[in-house]
Each structure stands twice: as structure tokens, then as C-alpha cells.
Image 1 (cartoon, rainbow over the protein chains, first blue to last red):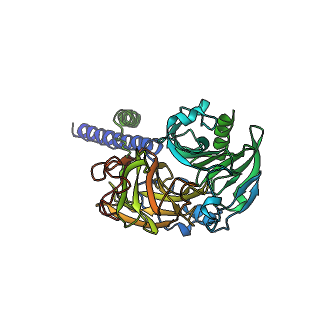
Image 2: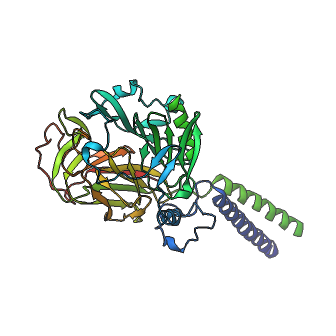
Length: 246
Length: 210
């Protein structure tokens, strides 16, 4: 009888130990494979960015992984010159007011408008198939000289996942009927010449992935259509530009 | 007896494993809430209420004007529920037509997700591409980062602007406007000289959860 009790106790002990171990092992393995359990998240305070080698493959799960790339880009000389017939350079601040800026030669009385109706005019920004993913943030701003529309500017939000990256982004779209000059400061290595809808275009790649300012400036012969994006790829900007130019 | 014990152990292992599947650890992805309140970029008085254009005919909008502060800063109070930084600001600069010197600060989270955009118009910046941390924490902490300086845009009839000033506007991300402390352009326009800028009243705010 006594032996039987010992055997029973031993069996119970084995059941308890083995069962508990198996239970914990299964739970632990589940935790490791869950999609909800991620590594370093936004809770972690970013560490010193300079300790990251900019040339190494980025670990995009680390907070602030992109900082050294932006810093290296900002330290490079900014390109000034002509690409695709568009002057990429800042305006000369010393040029007298009546010789510079908004109105084409021979016109005056420049006026600022904020009205969606400008989008019905030739300079209107019509997004076509991108209308759902690229949404206006505020009213378009237009300038007119002697009653004729000469330029339109509007800002847009790009919905998450639609701009070529995982997150959301923004695009600023400028259209001018008489200028071939635009200024976005960036190193020469990110600029190139290409085509959008059969028209010459200056193209600015982001710094890395969708990080850093990206741009496409299409030479419209009598002006330009410029798209400047944050958090989006250059391919996305080109696709939107093609839609606008249709 | 040995076989019996092994069988019992095997069954216990299977049962334990099954229980582990049935009652897994509660996996919680702790969410963190963030807030960024943006303040005036200069120290001067507000010179126009919420507007799109501050010339007659006045049009309401998502911008305030402040008297020429010369030096313009991104200023914010940021917070995060875990005490970490609130995010990152990235500066972009565009000069599209000599009428518009546009300096932008785009607000991102620390993993690079875009959340909002603030425009400082009539401000020239040599800091395009620069980025900076937007401080957070418990309680909220401040950030002040120099982004550029005001410029005298060509005036009418070449450009529709007048004296040097900073036009501070939200241009993306659905930021909230402080319409409690700052009046609409209908009540505060060209002759307006109301609230002092700097850290007195926030202008825009953005709250999000990651």
C-alpha cells in the first residue's frame, strides 16, 4: 500500500512538472512569433545617430534610423543649374520688386485667390485616379495678373501606404504659366533628367527610401508643373505628375 | 511501470501543451499616445487672425500672421505617454516664384511615419534637409529649433504682400487650430495687434497614437 502511494505521488509529480513545462514552452514560443510583439518601437528614446554607419544597410526598426542619412545629405553642397530646361536656383534677392516674380512681362495687378474654382481652369490640378489617395489639405492658392491666372499652389496629404512607403506623406503641387525657375535645395547626386508624359522633367530622388524631399518638375513649355513630396517615392510623384499632365 | 510512467508523462505534456494553446499569454502591443502643440515662430504680436489671405477681401483659413520676428523658430510642447521623444521635425524649403519663400517643418514619428506639416511663409531657410528631435516626455517638454529668417517679398503689384512678417500655416496632416485664443480674420485683420507670439498660446496641435 505504501509503495503504491509513493508511485501515485511520483506519477502526480511527473504530470505536474511535465505538464507545466510543456504549458510554459508553448506559451513562450507563441509570444516569439506573434505579429503584435515587435522589437524596438516608438517608446524607445532614439540614441545618438552619429554612431550609425550611413553606408551600412539601415535597420528601419530602430527609432531614428534615417537621421545619419539626412545629416549626410544636408552636409553636401546644393546643386544650382539647369535640368530639363528648368533653372534650379534661388532668386536673386537684390532684383527690384517690379522686375521680379509673379507677373509675366507687360502684366501687373497681381492678385491672390483662394478658391476651388481655379481647378476648373487650364492650370487646375486634376488628380484623376489619385483623387482618393491624394487629398487636398486646404484651398488652392492662385495668383492672377490683369485678371489672368498665372500660377496655382496646393498642398495635399497622401494616405498611408499610397505614396510608395508604409506611412502617410505630403505633396505640394505648383503650376506656373510663365516661369521656368524653381528652387528646392538638394545635392547634385539626387537630381536627374527624365520624361513625364513625353515632356522633359527634372527629377529629385528622396535621400533614402521615402525619407527626404523628393520632386518632379515637368517643363510645360510655357511654364512648369512641380510636385514636391515628403514621405513618398519619386516614382509615385512621377505617376501623379503624368495624371495631372493628361 | 516504466512504460506507464512514460505514457503518463507524454499525456501530461500533450495536455499541458494544449492548455498552453488554449490559454496563451495575453499579448499586448502597448500603444503610446503623442501630442505636439506648435507655438508661434517669432516673438512679435499677432498681426492677422485665422486667414487664407489677409488682404481685402479677407478670407478665413488655417494661418496666422505675426509681426516680423526676423529669426523664426519651430517651437513646440511635445508629450508622449511613455516619456520618450514626441517625434522629429524635418525642414524643407521651396522658392517657387519669388512671391513665396516657403519654409516647411514636416512632423514625423521616431520610426519615420509622417503626421503633419507646418508652413512658415515669407521665411528663407538655409536648413533644407535638416532634421531635429521634437522633445516629449511626462510632463510635456519644449523644443525650439531655428528654421530661417523672414524676407521682404516683392510687394504689390508684383506680389500681393506688404510688410515683412511670418505667415504660420498648417498645410497637412489635419492639425487642430487654436480658435479659442486666436480670432478669425473677420475680427483681426490688417490693423490687428492682439496677442504676443512666442510661448504664450499654442497655434496648431496634433495628437496621434502608435
